[in-house]
Image (cartoon, rainbow, N blue to C red):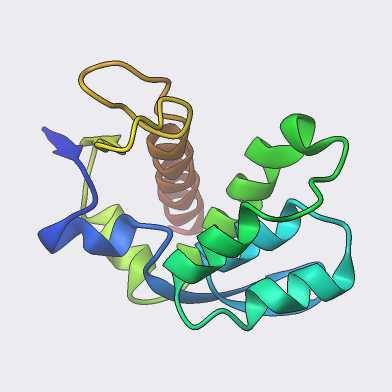
Length: 145
């Protein structure tokens, strides 16, 4: 089974889903807010993103940041840290585990071939990281039995 796209019944997989996370001591209402804020080391810019009324607005504000020098080196790790937080708690934890071994693909139309797949082409890093977190959760559950 494949889960392609984070729409309809799988909207909760999206980084835009409301799921409070903490990054470097600051609380954000979505993974998207935190991810965009992590692009900069400027505290006031992070606060500006945290105050965004929606994940879409946070993403727009993130396009105007002074990007930290090592961003390309750390962005996958940052995303993994945020996804681990999101999927550690209800209801996201159980929803993710219930996907079983389905391949999760962040299918999109906006040509993001790094985080997802567009028109059949892309690296699908977001889908792969979510599947990694699911695997970690399953391993932790198996170890506790």
